[in-house]
Each structure stands twice: as C-alpha cells, then as structure tokens.
Figure 1 (cartoon, rainbow, N blue to C red):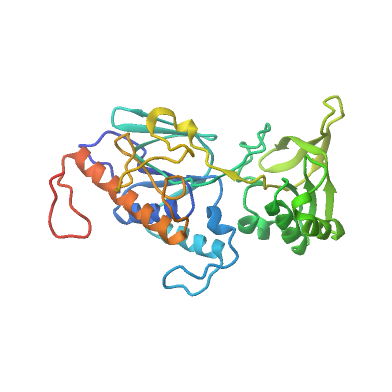
Figure 2: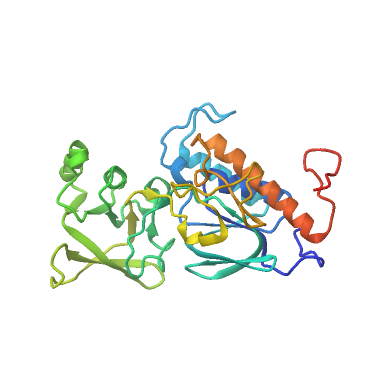
Length: 330
C-alpha cells in the first residue's frame, strides 16, 4: 500500500493514528510494516510511559527508562516509513469510506483511523498555545527538558509533575519560572520547598498565563494576577513553556462516531473496532483493565492489523490473515 491502490478511494494516508505512546507507536510499526501509508498525530511523545523513570517489566528488556523505550518504539516505526507530527487533533469526520482528521495545523484524509491518545495532557487554553505546540510549547518535561539546557523556560501547573519538571530543568541549568494559579502546593510541601530553595527557580503563585507569543518559535508568555482582571498583563520572555496541568480522558469530541462507557472510555470489540467501520481504538482510552505498556502495545498491534484488513476489504482483495497461510472469508 506504499502507493495508492486504484481500487481504493483517494486519501493522503492509509491510516492516521491519533496518539504517540505505546498503543499508537506499536500500531504505527505494524501498519508501516504492512506498507500502509502511516501518520502519527500526537501532542507529545510517550504518554504515561514517558513519565516513568524505570520500566522493568517490558518483555525482553530488564530495565529501561520510559522515554527511552518510547523513543525506541518511534524509531522502529519510522524505520519502516511511519511519519509523525506533533499536533492536536480537533475533529474526525467520515464521508463515504474516507476519514478527514483535522488538527490545529491542517487536515488529513485517511482510509482508516486508529484512536490511541490515552490520557490527554490538559491544555493551558490560551491564545498561541496550539500555534506554538512543538515550537516551544511542550507537555512532557521527561521528553524535552534536555533540549532546554541553560535556556529560559516556564513551567505551568499545580501538579507533582510541574514541581518535578521545574527541579529537573534546574538541574540542567535552565532559568525556570514556576507558575501556579493557586497560593501553593499543599499536597507536595516538601517538593515545593525544594523548588523554592533552588537558585534556578523563580516561583510565581496566584498567577495565570494569558497567552503564548513568538514568531517561528516561542519567545514569551503573558502573565496576570489571578482574581484581578484589571491587573496589568506582564510579558515574560521564555524560550520554552512546559505545560504540566495533569491529564484526562478527552474523548467526548468524537461525538456519535463511537460509543462511550460511563467513564468516557471508547468501546471496542476484540478486534479494536468501534461502531464506525474503519475507526479503531486501542490503549488506555478503551476499557482495557490493565494499564500496562505491554498490554497497550498488543492492543495497538491488533488495531493496525484490523485497519489493514479493513482496507483489503475496501479494495476487494482477499483478507489475508497476516500470520497464517490461508484466507478468511469475512
């Protein structure tokens, strides 16, 4: 499928995968190995696994850092031709047999879509954030902090991850401004005290971010005191913005294309199919019980092979079972 099949509808890609963690990157590997034109769209690399300092239960790997494992997943998929873009998907639509996936940057068409976005990082929800995503705005300090060594950055959020990111960046000799819209970090007093004591960290409490600005990349953020809309807006020059406001299952934007559980998980069958033909889902955004890298990876592989089978059906070709030497009449 590396070149479009004349029997298939025209589309930019055979599969667009939404999510760049264990499920999505494994799906990208399996899809690209089947010569499917494959694109991964994700806000950040690695998901929850990337925030795990040490993974010791991934088969064949006794011990590895989470971000290193996810980088290995990505490199493996790219070796077979998968592409990745750091964008936020805002809409998925279907017209006939072709999906249109719209992100903050552009729209793509695909014959199949795999939902694998797991738990989604919370946004700042301010002007400029999406525009500079991947251009200075990041949602994973574990992934991107080394790129900002000795640079001026802001860390935004009231979470454990925000404090951890600020301290990590300080160790990299970055000049860090830690911003929180509340008066403190009552759940993490010891860690907050450590941040306050760091000579590389400036703490700004009761302060909110109003905008992200720049040209080709981020150059600053707007700040304003919380509770006083008439307060003057301050422009803080920064080269990077680390958004660490926690995560959520953000699935309702899919609308009627899928069915949901009470917890907003996307319902799938054993082949990872949703209610919409050609639309599949895998990983932590589904009701799978075990939130483990190996489980999500297996689900991603199943979703990719199901997407391949779906396209075979569209083209009118036999649906060859990938791992067996016979065809199945589905």
